[in-house]
Length: 329
Image (cartoon, rainbow, N blue to C red; front, side, top):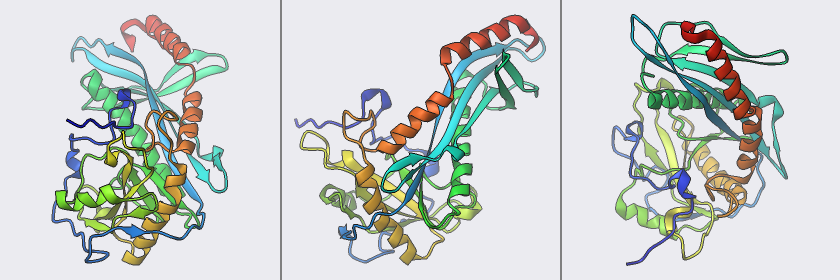
């Protein structure tokens, strides 16, 4: 029996998963010959440094509550905070301060409510009340907070990707982007859907850090997003050689771009991703999700988490507010 390590710290799960997102299931055949007939390694030799902006977000549940409703019964609620922003990677990486955004939400499945103000004096924070019909328990409330963070990332990505002088990288598939720019790439840290056959996956074991697979085309469900009716071009690359102790696929990442761009432009984007991302990848021991969480993104996450504020202070302030309001929330 041969055991191999998977690179992420166990608290974060793994970069390889069998829990497939139903939204990732292709609705038709995947075309692996869209770039070339021969399914073989493509080596990228151009060493040009390309400016790239990477978007990421953090979210934090603050306090779970129950709204006591004599008529409708008890209703779960969640006070939550989220922050999104971008980091620009050129010769050096620096955080784009103007992109940093913080939102505070009170998510619930009850009647519409006004925003809730927490704190006093200069330390006042407003939690925007949002009714979420599906948030009928604590788990669904957490999922709703996650979705709102992804929505904020998507909105920022749509804005920043208008600048064609830079590649814009966004965490996750592009299927939710309504108006993506022409030079935007989604990177998928946790692979739950390969899209290619088991025989074709053998090529991934041979990839070096300056290599990628050929592009393959994924048809998209137009009911999810009309802007993605042309599907997506996707490819795999290797971020880092992790050593013999690790599973060979532990350093592999899947990427994708909008299927509406010309195939030649998609090939250029794929090549540029090989030039940009491996040099930004983290090493095991440097980041809990190494190598898939990029070093500049790790720094961005620290800044965003700091912007969320002290969780203990927020917990106390929310508890004080709830204590004063009683069952009048």
